[in-house]
Length: 346
Image (cartoon, rainbow, N blue to C red; front, side, top):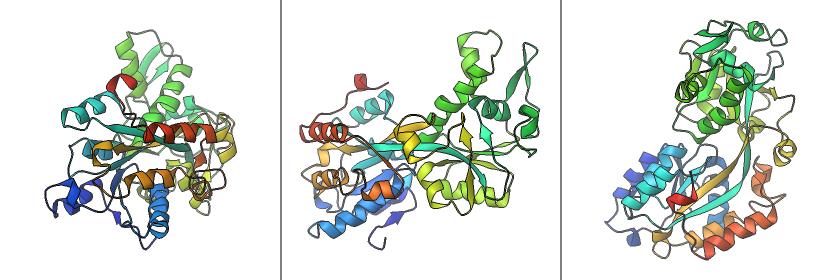
């Protein structure tokens, strides 16, 4: 990807942009930041876009996590703010309100496809057949014992369930700046908490009990999946949380766990059989359309059959394509100038 400039973080993009003059109109390169899950897909599209449209500069694609990208996206309008935010979760109502407060009112949502969140261990480790309740009991700060909540002292996986390996518990999960974290909490941690049958308590206390994590076995990863992989390499007992596409690209060093007896794959995620999947997005700053060259063309190219369609370049890279009619609706809404409001999202 010699044409794609992979910035170290969303902040790096802002620094690069601020070196120019004061208006977005003077900048001629699309700037993108956000989700580390969407990063490899956006990088592929950016490179191919530069090849297909020589009249436009190749977009600059950075990471920084979904939350970090959306924060910078919402900072305002102008060349010192990014044009597009990649996200592995849907934008929140509070983020839309923050955007609106800074003059960003034309927020256009582009759903590009789907991805799955997988649990993986080093390739030489035993097989893991996980359920959400196993993850909850491994990493929750407190667990139920004889109808009471007590400090979590599980040390090995087989103490939780005899079918699991006799391996010390260590779990590397995405930090709160990643959209993956939100999906992990909703689809795995909370689901596991419900299955663990906690004693009755007030709703607020129940929410806290379901998401409070122990500090002795949990490693929160603020960087991208390469940092999680490095953690597995430094401590081979670690179970890491990855996007399916990253796992696919590292099958030689990783072994994936089943979740609820389902092997994660393009097919099981597309069918909805695999329980830990999520849609992927990017958000376009409508105020920059017409001032930053190529934004409309980039969106159309990203959603083209060649890129995001079945058999396209992004499916080859590990993204699960959305149905054709869904993608057509997304592109039509973008072309019509449909903008998100806070009431449209949670």
